[in-house]
Length: 129
Image (tube, rainbow, N blue to C red; front, side):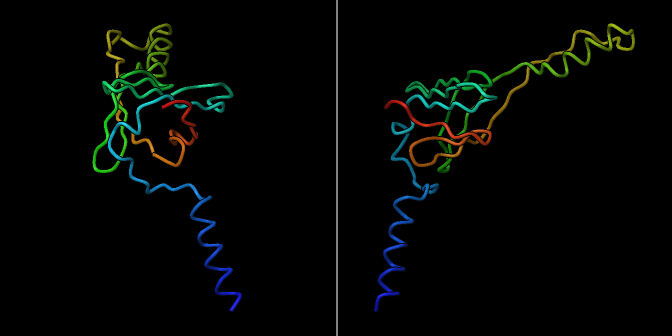
C-alpha cells in the first residue's frame, strides 16, 4: 500500500540528507585537511588538521588525536581574562601576587559530522582533502 512505501522512501531520504554524526572516519587520514567557518564572532576562522598530528584552531595551535571514535584537539592558551583581572587589581593596589602563570592547557572534543566538524557550536566545512 502507498503509506508503507512513502514512509520507507522518506526514511531513505532522511538518511541521505541528515547530518550523519555517527559516521566513523576510516582512520585518521580522512580527517586531515582544512575546515572553514564564516561565523566565528562574525569572522572567518579555520581548523587545520595536519598529517603529523599538529593542528591550528581559532583558540590556538597544538595537536589533534582520534581515540575511541572521537576527535580531540589539544592546545595551550593564555588566560587573558585572569591576566586582566590581576592587572586591574595590581593597579588599584589589592594584589601582591603578580608573577602568576597564565598559560593553560585545553583538550576539547570536536564532533565529526558529514562534510565537516562542529567546534564550539560552529560548523566548519571541509575545504580541501
